[in-house]
Amino acid sequence: MPNPLDDFLDRGFTCDPKDALRLALRQQTTRVLRRRRWLRQLTNVGLAAACYLAGLATMWFLVPRTTATGDSPPSPPPLVIADNRSKPPQPEEKPPERPELYEFQAQTAPPAERAVQLRKAGDLYLEQDHDYAAALRCYTQAFNAGGDQALEFSPDDNWLVMAIKNARRKEKVNEQ
Image 1: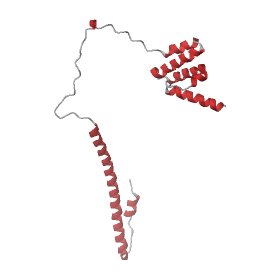
Image 2 (image 1 turned 135 degrees about the horizontal axis):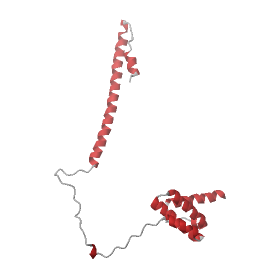
Image 3 (image 1 turned 30 degrees about the vertical axis):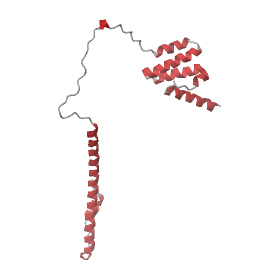
Image 4 (image 1 turned 60 degrees about the vertical axis):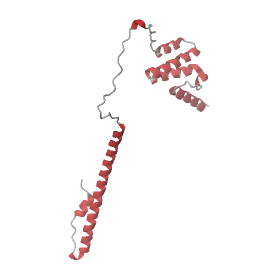
């Protein structure tokens, strides 16, 4: 990349022989400016190399190393095969609850129970399925069915329920 300072300094200026002082001063200034630029570039390269070496040193100290004695990593514990006839039968695992069932049951439930069913469906949508849109739908319907008492904060509320309750409270304050 052409440097404008080099172009200026390399330009041939003509001067009278009487101007030897000007010529000597120009040559000395040119050397000083080039040396300073070279030192600045060398300093930048040195700083970049120092940063790189600092990163390498950090990784050297953070990465666990095995000992030089040739120790192998610890082996897993031996597999023990047990006789299943000597153990009592294990109870069957209960299948996970499906939020769709609670949402469907809430359609025919009385209003007080509807809010509880929809709240449970919203919790399951949020925790199991990570379906935020369905959870929001169920929570909104639960708060509509539950009335003002459903908007009271409780320690069991998750982040989405708290956000909805807070927004509903702000809406009521702004309506008044």
